[in-house]
Length: 340
Image 1 (cartoon, rainbow, N blue to C red):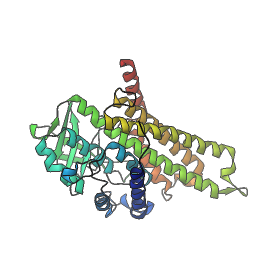
Image 2 (image 1 turned 90 degrees about the horizontal axis):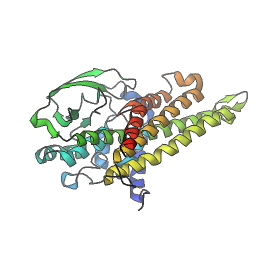
Image 3 (image 1 turned 120 degrees about the vertical axis):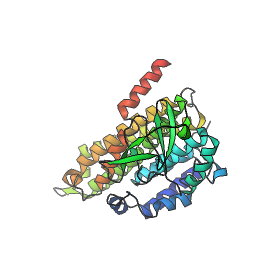
Image 4 (image 1 turned 180 degrees about the horizontal axis):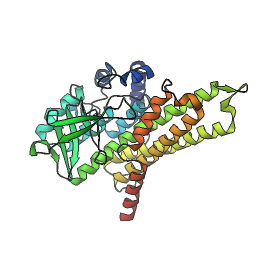
């Protein structure tokens, strides 16, 4: 049994990173804060043309027919770039749920458009009150009373909400479930929605944590006090080392959870939800630590809105809490272990 990523998977992730470096630099993320829809112009279309949006969509619907294992490294790159687009909810949650559980007519209506990027899909966690990018979404995946529904634009109303990260446009949704919107009445599918969203948030959080660590290491190597770089101080080294260790523990667990979701069970057997919960708990803790350490090591400049650090701090805080925070997922792990 081989768990390492293939050369093709690594190459795909490298390609996405190159795209994001060119089309989603910090200046573009900052500009998305003031964009009416929180977008980076042209980025959604580029990601669609590269196949990122349709990674999990079947080839018959114009997608790449790939798995969660193929997607997880791409999600880390999206976090590393603080990408404002709702790619995770679209590609890692909504498309797989529609692919695997929606009625044939519903899947045929939406999967092709989603893969080519002409329709924007998003999803909400059963644990969260707000929906990301609902204002621009063509279809929203929502959970209620043990059911999963796909609600098209026009069948719901949305009220924008304040977010600490203004590139993440959140809304409160008002909607009514109907037979026409029903994807599945199986409570297990509701759990799968949470698992897929939590894994996507965990992978992005790992990417954000790595970007914060890279920014911090670069800063403390340049910033001088008393004629010496502050990075030579033992306390600063310890901060950076602790973040690196936390990320190195979290990332393999995220990769293991992606494998478990792809194969329907963990490598040792058992419920993949436990692997996902462990991954999200570790990733949330790691990105929280990365945020605190980066802010402390940057000093006063880290508190300013003019410095790019705040873009990743706020993304990290948001991802840490979304799709269930660390405490929520530790309770899930505990319940799973108690149940055997």
